[in-house]
Image (tube, rainbow, N blue to C red; front, side):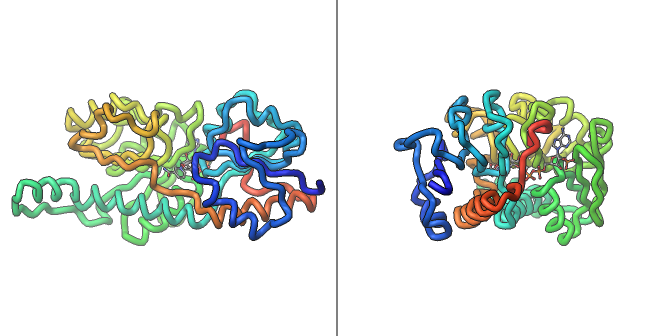
Length: 312
Ligand code: NAP
Ligand code: GLV
């Protein structure tokens, strides 16, 4: 078999949403599923989201693993991942657009006091609440990468005061940038609305904790659209209950689905969404997979590679 086979592994979504796009672009590919994977040594490509630990290491002829998401934490967490096999992640304008919509929606929600206005409506109270102008609101983006920079561009067009925090120095027009551990504190001190778009790595696990919240200005709001592992939930609840933080939007959780008993579901200052900020578009993703397989066939490196040393 010239091309080898492609295996869908632990994708967590109905296969029929994905396979027709690939069949249209690469009808020659032998596509296999976990139920019927065939011989392991025939599999050259694997599409994965949360693969079972050890399952990728059991595929000896792998040429590329495709993460179905931008975040690869669930894949690189597997210590047995065969690191000589390139891991390609999702970098796609449709994903950036969806995340930008989610971030803009939630920045506006907290800036324009929508949470308080909805509470007043439930009480049938006619009371106007003034909001500052956008240029007076400082939005800090924790994780100034592909998605963070896309969101910043849209927020900039709405006149917000933008800042971004990254690992390495960055320059972006109209955005004050900070980097590294020494840049974190000054970045936080001036973030009225904090948006987390970091990858989950050992260096960012639990970063949204009591210490970080204490560095934010009083009345700050937090939007976590990255991973649940960034957040220390009890610390957030304490900071909200003390009144230091005004509100939070959470899209991602340490345990997903969020258990019914989790207090965040009913916290009066929290908005919960079910990991739906930005979903990978099947057609765009399969176009990326097909393009990459062609590149690899031509001896070119895959695109959007994960750096295993950094973990993202
Ligand atoms: P990305 O392009 O890799 O950007 C990550 C950013 O975080 C980069 O600016 C990076 O700095 C910075 N960073 C990483 N570790 C850091 C550290 N220890 N200290 C300071 N900065 C650090 O990733 P992306 O494509 O924007 O995606 C971000 C995350 O969003 C994904 O990993 C995923 O978990 C999450 N996500 C969530 C959803 C959802 O539906 N909720 C959808 C898609 C993605 P450098 O630029 O210097 O490397
Ligand atoms: C979704 O959470 C992603 O990482 O793309």
